[in-house]
Amino acid sequence: MRVLAGDIGGTHCRLAIAEAGRDGVDILRAARYASRGHADLEAILTDFLGAESAPEACCLAVAGPTDGRRARFTNLDWNVDASVLAARFGFRNTLLVNDFAAVGWGLDGLRAEQLAPLQAGDAVANAPRLALGAGTGLGVCLCVWRDGGYRPLASEGGHIGFAPLDATQDRLLAHLRRAHGRVSVERILSGPGIVELYRFCLAEVGRVDSPLLHETHPAPAITAAGLTGDDAAAAHVLRLFAQILGQTAGDLALAARAEGGVFLAGGIAPQVLPALRNGDFLRGFHAKGRFAEWTRSLPVAVVLDADIGLRGAARAAMLETTST
Image (cartoon, rainbow, N blue to C red; front, side, top):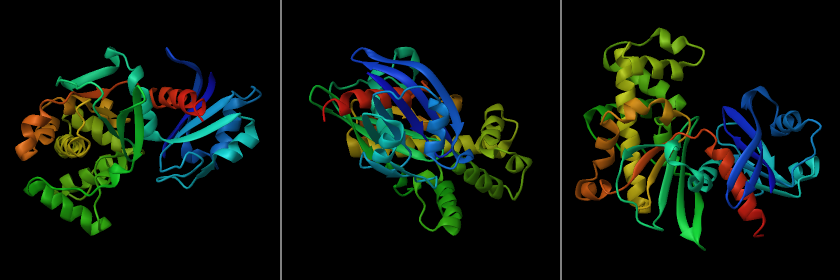
């Protein structure tokens, strides 16, 4: 099946023409756009398709809740209607899926070299899987075994409340509560969250400003400075980020009983892989009291494939539109 696959986020919009079959997904052509640089999604699709005839199917992974036909983005002022897109571009089948549901669809197509293990664990066949990842926001998806394969269940788990683990995190919660009231884990585990963490870490040492905050893209600048150790506050950010990501992944793994594995996807995890490997992530992941030993049994890996959302969307188009 020839598919227009899309991974539509609050920051970037990635589109591909793909061939989806039972043996996998081949991406034939792809392009990336700045989401906020365009009036709406239709303008981006028009530019990408040009004079090319429309593929038979279109599946777009969107950063927000969707019923499969309509979606409103969480971190972008866009609305998308599958029927409108089908009429405008001539797609025979059009489907919208949550962006992390697309990651769930794409897990089965990953090769060993596209995963960076953080904990070997021992996967249980057909047991639930958990995917989560930080980018513009925090995406979460649970995958369950059904009808001979894994099927993703969309989730807004990134908006669960932040539960501090120690005195430093207590102060972080108080710091964020002053600005936001209720504090979700997405306030921390995201690109904007990295900036929030940096402001907190500066405040911890009596500082209120830094040149890194005035960079065009402060989150990547803070991350880079933290990885090199050039900025002590930025290094503290990565330790906190890794630990809180571990805590959150462990909490969600408990809720899902994710004995099929925990997968860290999204744009940030591969960029901060050294910080996730230094022990802070697993300390947070294992901090589960009576269930600490159980968390040590779970396979945990970082997804390195930047195209997993596109491949997952193409696979969803093949499996979902042909079954309806």
